[in-house]
Image (cartoon, rainbow, N blue to C red; front, top):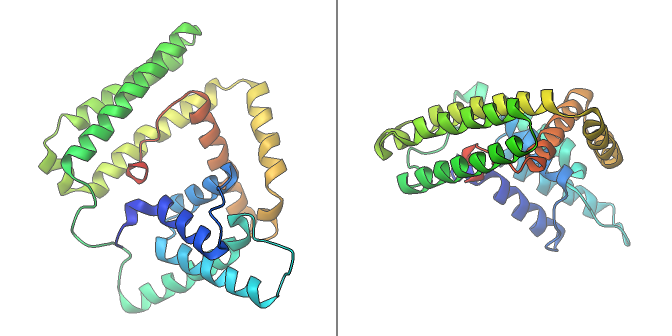
Length: 236
């Protein structure tokens, strides 16, 4: 799928165009996008779902209301994804995009170096707070990124899916480490924030989708709290 690594930007722009105003997405909106990415929902399905949701909204002729979040579009996004999945099975097609890389080798290497630098800073903060387990885990993640960045640009570009899998593994290890070390008080505050913002999502998503969204929201907040970089190529 073309521009697949522009997943977040494409969805944000499509939502803003459909709404007609450059509204800022909320933290929960971004977590919802991450949950779609995590679930393998194609960008095309998300865009189609957003358009359909706004078309139905317009038909209801709400004079004084606006669609204020992506949660309103969730049901249509999932429906579009299911339709595309069925079409894929019937036709034998895949969602994968073209063979041309959306990045240069230099961009990828710089992205990895930026991640290494930020992990180093986070390790220093953890050390200052006497959280030596986190310091060790952050240093290990930085070491893993250095090993990847040491490869040639040609090698990195040759298998972007493989590179994405490596980065995902490192990020998930970091997520597990952050969750283990998170205080009860901080985790409680994050869950309370999730509950306050979940109202529009609960009307349009099933239990499994809500659980995934909650998990992504907590993950996003934990990374922000520790000033950690996200490692997926989707953030490049």
